[in-house]
Image (cartoon, rainbow, N blue to C red; front, side):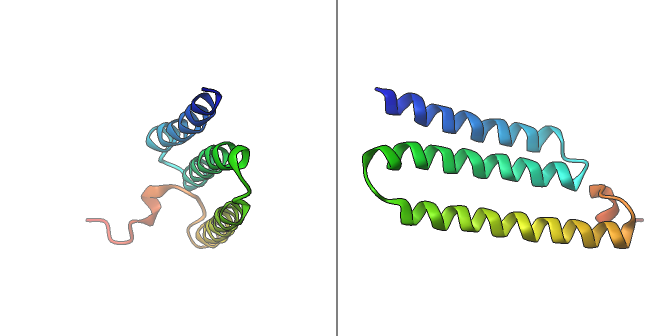
Length: 98
C-alpha cells in the first residue's frame, strides 16, 4: 500500500510540471524548468517503485543521464537564443511575422 502513495507522489510531481508548462509558457527558461520538473517526477516515481523492489538502477542512471543531457542542451540553446535575439520570449522565435 505504501508503494501506491509513493507512485502517486511521482505522478503528482509530473502533473505539477505539466501545469507549470501550460501556465508559464511565455519564457523559454520557464519551459526548461517545467521540463526539469517533469523529469524529476519521472525519476522520483521510478526510484521509489524500482528502488524499493530490486536493484534495477541501470535504467535509472540512463534516465538521469538523458535528463542531464536535455538540461545542458536546453541551456546552451537558451544562451545562444539570448545572444541572437536579446530575450527569451517564445514570441521572438517567430522569424517571419505578417
